[in-house]
Image (cartoon, rainbow, N blue to C red):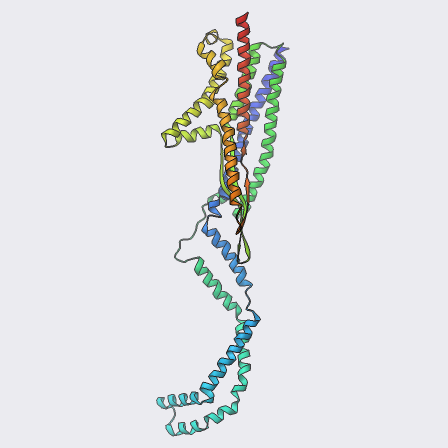
Length: 430
């Protein structure tokens, strides 16, 4: 009977380990997708990018220019001003004879006409001009000029567009190169919007698979734990503790390799009114980080500051090395008299095991999460309180699977230490 139980426990734990590896790969791919999505929509590429403001402003101005029409009342004013101007010209040059006199004087100077003929024309010029009734034709001329101006509104629009381009896009400025171009090629997308939409769909789809995978692993490990605990009468005490230890190892590996916290703060939308038109910036990522314990340790150790290196080493020792060392000693304690008689091994398993830095680290993770969540939420709410603009903020920060498995390891590790401790106390009394 006990061998059947051993086989079942082995198969369940092995299956959980295999599924855990698949979960690690899936989580790694999802994190990469989230990082690319964050890069596509980082706020410094959108809301904080003057080139994006220019493009959006040009779109609004172009729309306004295309819909530009001169008020009919303005054409009426233009027509009135033309009539006043033409009447003034007629009185100053035609009715007074000044225009004819100037023309004849120029002709005399150039030798095109003699002085006698010029004097003859001067006397009859005013009467000839009155016969043309030019003054009566002024209203019609003014109407024709007004209609000509009205029919050339597109020329005015062209001038406005040219001036706008010259104002916003200085020819001396270097051409803007979007740093996301290479990332866009990676996904073979035609633009940022389509790439972001595709990534968002992939992330949501992977989230479902990861959630199902976590549930499956947890169910299998809990089932293995219950089978081992309920089969205590049929299996040896050593096998029971060894089963708990192996389950703890699986949870510990998943806990330190999977992300602990996703810190993701976004402006879901930012809208501002410009010339009566809404200028929008959607999905602006303020900050994104998704790190496992191993990632954090690696980052701290590789940093320049000696203080952060020391913290990195301490995290590595107490959250990675010490937990594995404690689990190893717990197993060897059952099988080796030398380890069983060692005061160091007893101290690690029975005393430090219960109050290790691994357990404290889990509390720190929760506290950091609560702190980050509160700070980000309060700051986003303050940003959204503007009157001249509208902001829709979203905080996607959350605890990731690594925190769940690491916490589970800590609990199971403490249970295992308590079981061994009670066993040893019973033997000592006996």
